[in-house]
Length: 445
Image (tube, rainbow, N blue to C red; front, side, top):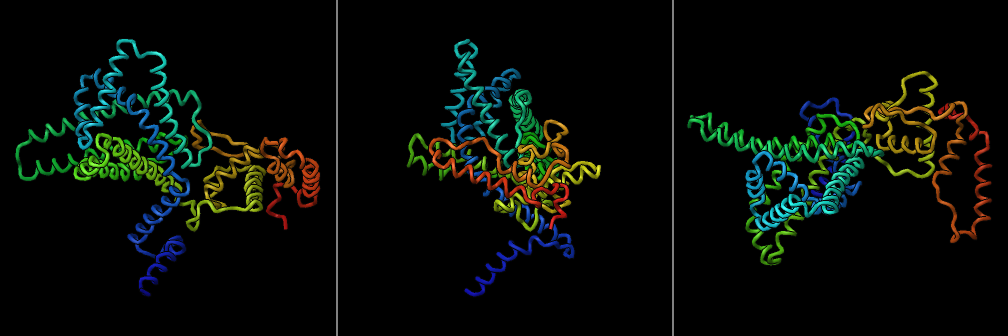
């Protein structure tokens, strides 16, 4: 018992302290293992802190609303290429454990396409289905932006162009991958039964679905956040998420005994909860992969494994003054302006704190963000006004007065106390310390 307790204490100490120490003296394999463990631990922390399980539930609901119009677009494009039978067979193969769900969905899709062709379902019905697709896509973007700490969504024009392109490119990608799989399978069957050639080709062919799903997740992780995502980080997370998704698919298809027990409990409604469970776990995998891509890209800007410590109001104001002074000093020295990553690396401040503080200072009118393009790939920060007119007191005053809420009738009896309090704050900000220039904040003692 004591040995087990000591082992648990040692593991906790390792994950809390030793893992985050610089281990330059270790072997290359040890450094690689340490890097993998760091990424997994930080990804789990970020996933839990952002409460992405709730986001996955919301996306599951949106998926259920938009699955029919999405399949309708896939079948419509497939029918234009004469591949609608192929798509239907692919869907039935991947979901053969839930044949009832597939029959109902395909029935809905065929009915929708038939009514659309006859002109009965035009107008409000099409708008409703398009809204469900746009709602799902926008929900994915908002969740990914939350993971990446991106405060600005796409503009309306870019939403229209990017979402429309995605609605048509994804079905085409599905058709191409389905056709490629059938072509490769047919080619393997026609190969002579050599000793090594055919078995090796068959083994490679089994890896094709994993590669295709990995590429799909990689594109999703690069495209959806409204910021620049490195291909390496997106590919690592994408192929791991793709492998996990294929594993979930394999379990879902081959769990016939479990499905039979579920049917005994729920009867004809068993297909719906099982499909919802599969959909929610799929979103868990997708969002964890997005978190992993964020952690991998910013792994050098996490300090001691603490990405976003809880700050008191005094610490928050101090950090705002400190970062604003860094930006002003760099501008005064006629050096290239800071971006968030450079500021985090040089001053050793966690990247999420830097992003949050820079966004707040820009919203308060202390700094101004200069974006390289609409995806904020090279956003830099400059003082919003003359640096010699920015004082410590003025910044604190702006931070104090942020917000648009006023005392309403319910708190009207505190008006006199509020007036005295604001006068007290103005007097407190008028002392010698608060009147110092922000650019000299580091020199204050």
